[in-house]
Length: 343
Figure: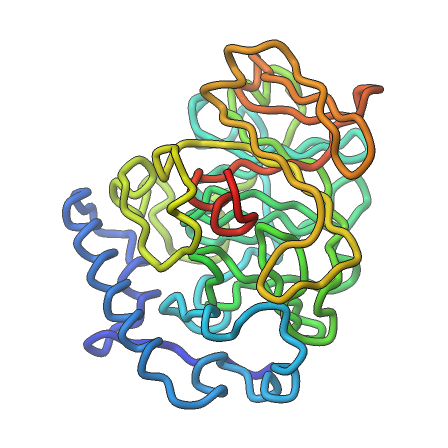
């Protein structure tokens, strides 16, 4: 497998800077590092002269003409391919053995009666877990820069972190053929499977205590990842709640919410392939608004969908009228505007 280009700052990669979690650091220091590295990465992105340097894969030259996005907007995030390592052989704890607390935030998935939880404190450092749940091979992905969660069937391949960003969000790659996927769209944006959509499965953002109350037999992703990370620490300073957006994103003039306000969105791609745009139906729901309202009946791609606030899980749930939960994702408010074009 070809290795991607790795950006360095003063001899240290962004991976080394952000993932050196063994040393306790203040939020101010973390914020300083994030902004300094992001600024340096942006300068480097602007000075790249060749497609190979910009994309990190030689074969992208032949794919570039068919790319779904403008390649000038496919930026280096400061790490090479797999510089943020996915978890490919995950281990799990039980409710009795997990080191995580009931208030820790997790991604919950249930397939064929098997429930698993993936703590944010691990996902912040790895972003993708390749797993098998209920007999189905899946990937669970999380972007700390965007708060987006997409879980999907992976077949016989595995997915990794490409090291690239599109609209400041995770770009995944399929290790079988190097196809790049924009995570918030769950769609191929470059490579053999460009414009193909991943088979998404429902995943919910909630707390571990709430998840275990509903799924007491759930397994919880372990910190035994094979990597040395400080899973007790959040590596991004005050990023989760401040107004700072590290990388350029579009359409922010349409946004009325705080950039880090939490929303959920549902989406259904159609067969169109407009350049640099999502094609299909999509709707956004602001958490602080929906939690005060009764369930809503909305139309998505020609069918009726019920969207409601789940008081127990403390999140938005979207479901068919028969109660079947459909895939949705949380996101920071700036993400929905950047990827779907309106608020």
